[in-house]
Image (tube, rainbow, N blue to C red):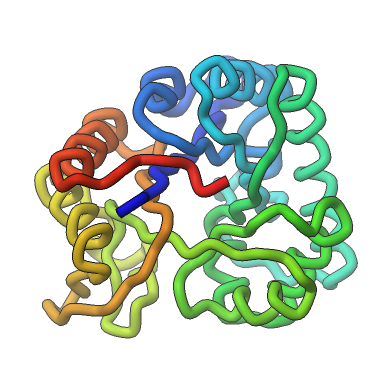
Length: 251
C-alpha cells in the first residue's frame, strides 16, 4: 500500500497568515501551493516552494478561479479560453518560482469551487486540461475518482491521479458534501485518522448516510486551512504508517 499525503499550503497573503505551512511540510509528501488567485502572494509562494524543496516534498500548483474575496469557493462562469489562460498563468508562475528554488511543479490540483466544477462540467474541465496540456502534458491532475476530468484528460493525453479527502464528508454517490451543509468538514482528529486508514487500506469511505462507498485513491488530502490542521495531518500520517502504508508522493 503506497499513499501520497497532500495538503493545501501557501495560502497566506501579506501580513495575513493561514495555517502552519512549515509544520505541515514536515508531515505531508505533496504540497498544493496556492498560486495567488484565491490566496497566496509571490513571497509566500517563494517561501513555501523553498521549504518544500528543502524537505523533499513534491510541489503542486493549486490553480483556482480569480476569487480572493471568497477564497476560491464561489463558482464562476468563464469562457473556456479565459479559464484556460488563467490556469496557464498560475501554473507558469508557481513553476517558475519553484524552479528558481531548485524544484519544479510536478502536478496540478484545482482548488475549491473550480475543483468541484470540473468534476462534473466537461467544458470547464476541458479548459483546465487544455492549460495543463499547453504547459506540460506530462503533469498529472489531482481529482476525485469518477469525475469527468479523467475522461477529458485521457483524450488530451494528460495523466490524472485520484484522491480522497480524510477531513471531508462524502455523499452516497462518492462526491463531497458541499461546504455550505452541516458537518461537511470533519474536525475530530480520531475520526479523520480512522477515515484515512479506511480509504487507504479498505479502499472505501463511509458516506453521510452511513453507507460504504468504494473509493480507490492514490493520494489523501488534509486541508491546511482547517483548525488544528497540523494535529489532524499528523494523526493521519501516524494512522497510515501504523497500518503498514508507505507514504510516498505519486510524482
